[in-house]
Length: 359
Picture (cartoon, rainbow, N blue to C red):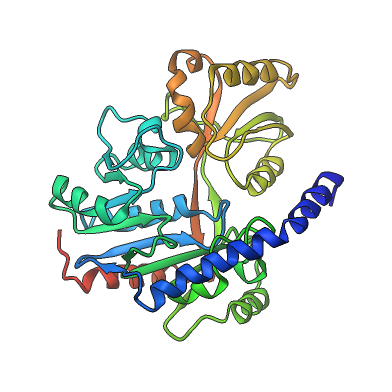
């Protein structure tokens, strides 16, 4: 651990009183819902919630995409997100003219990759769902993106994600740790997925984590690894670029957890440099100038810029400036480990079928 990390951890420890206060507020809120003082509303249709107990990247967006690929050919499915860091308020339904500034980067990513899926945002999910169903009356299932803490809506199927390198069982409340909800809230989930596992995860390691999480009888536990695709040009998706060992990469990101991405780039290229922005960073023209300047100073013969799909939807607004820039987007998806992908599919589709949904 370097000096910066030690300093950061020390500061987090000093903030322990605030973490205890935050934890007390979260505990009280959950108690009010548990005792039905505050009501959770059920909707008579399949609602699938994808969420976590912590802040930071656990892979929620790739899991939503995993579900969309799984369900889109069978069911008229829609997504509903909060639309974090968007410039609009209230309910918004994406259309052909929508930008990331209007609905947020992750919903925009869903809209671009799944143009036939209804993608909506709204801070108040309970108000947004009727509006979504009014606008898209053929909707047969809704995926709530990052909705686990928003208990005003009671989802029928809760998928809880936890990062292999930062399991919720070992975490603590913000700001000392990364938890934004109680550990015991995991009991509300029907499916738990340990994400970002190493490909080399052994059966023994899997059993130890399962014992640590201790899923309840009604819960299913899965493990997933990140699977990276072939980078494609941000403006011309048909133009791809295969990583190789003579390549130098400028990695440009505004995401919560960059470490797995760095490891992948380092393992598949000669070297890389990194420009990291805060999560959900809104790129400016000055940022783009800095990126160009940094890239021009790289002296390897083979060199490109790589960003994430989430960042790409916030960069594509500079279409004219990007036309001649070798800026490539690296796609990712979940890969379920230990030959349990069929079981996960069976569980999700079985939940949908309970509502007799037929497209």
